[in-house]
Amino acid sequence: MSQISAPPRLHGEQLTLGYGNHVVADGLTVAIPDGKFTAIIGPNGCGKSTLLRTLSRLMKPMHGQVWLDGNEIHRFATKEVARRVGLLAQNSSAPGDISVAELVARGRYPHQPMFSRWREEDKQAVERALKATNIEDLADQPVDTLSGGQRQRAWIAMVLAQETSILLLDEPTTWLDISHQIDLLELLRELNQKQGFTLAAVLHDLNQACRYATHLIALRDGKIIAEGAPTEIVTPELIEAIYGLRCMIIEDPVAHTPLVVPLGRG
Image (cartoon, rainbow, N blue to C red):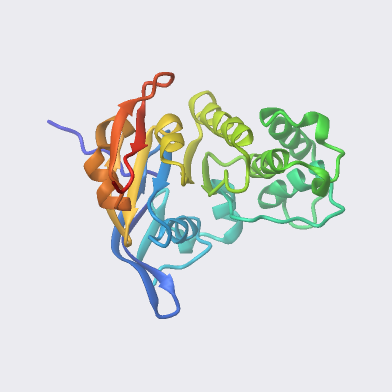
């Protein structure tokens, strides 16, 4: 007798997403596979960031439900959601005089009882997060003096200090130069493969998504056009359907993952 597999810890059913009267997606059913690094790809305005914000409970769907660990996510208290799901939003900002260690310590808020003092377990969680992101030597440095890549690592360390096993990242490589983009994606892959985090990130660079993610969700106009492993779903036909871009797909000579080569409009 075949067994029915349990649904992923985080998934949404029949979601209608939008702002005010503007609908971005309608009837969208999506799941974030446990233990994988999922990249959400698609053209600007297709609903990627809106979907991620809804899955994190930062936004409420117009219709449909988001489920977390078998319960409708809006039935959880805010702190309880933050103990289960970490979110790195776009353009995160911190007070200019705050240090890296103080920023990372804010990730402990969901775990601290009301009126409690700083505990040894909080201190250890911050130290682990700083070590995991390789910024221990920056702990006392003001956040506003960091480079873009260092700042993103500090924000990821804050999310890691929450000690959740699901991390959602909205365009984490935006505004970073290519060296810092690769550095950050290598860190995310390590968190997924060596530390077991379930990751979902909105990424714009197709080749980076194919190289680092183990699962893709391809969106266009609020609909899922395809999803699966990059080697299984990335084809010239898919890229043209999503982006209207003619291309050829070759094998990345280093990662052996799909490499998208634009053909231009000629």
